[in-house]
Amino acid sequence: MSTHPFKQSKLYTLVFVVKGEKVLLGLKKRGFAKGKYNGFGGKLESNETLIECAQRELKEEANIEATNLKELGYIEFDYDSLEYSMKVYIYLATDFNGIPKSSDEMEPKWFHVNAIPYELMLSDTQHWLPKVLQSQFLNGYFRYNNENQIVEQKFHMISD
Image 1 (cartoon, rainbow, N blue to C red):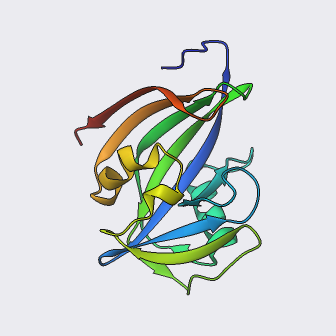
Image 2: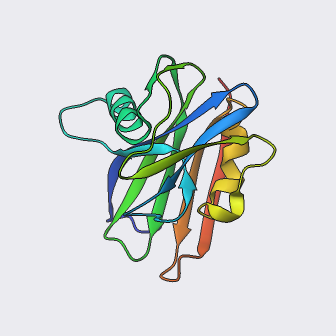
Image 3: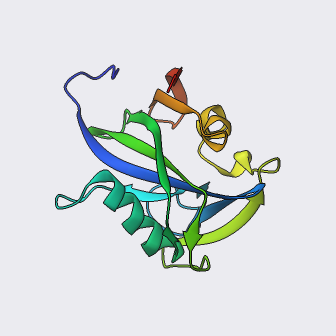
């Protein structure tokens, strides 16, 4: 899918936790997307599976353990400013143990699914998060230029 065929992809996970009509988002305190809301996730380590990565990142960033992670596909993010693309596997969790708690990286906050602060999230999120929250399978590609503007996007739903 990438317009930069020689770019290497790094693997990441991203978890969205839903409880009834609410979704748990985290405000990034540092690093990539600082000051933006997002799900919980990060880079795959060499000694773990994608699901182990999703579980680890959720525990580290929100202090909760998902008991039912459902993989819904992936989205590849290609930033012209980076030497690699980010292939992000998306997970949905509807059951978990623990109480969400702030970490050094994220500040968790519940939002009603009809009041998600898309204006405080990365601009691509509004295109695909509503589908994820409906438990729909998807694959996507977003390319950002050096000004962090979307210049190309491909997105499709997958039948299960």
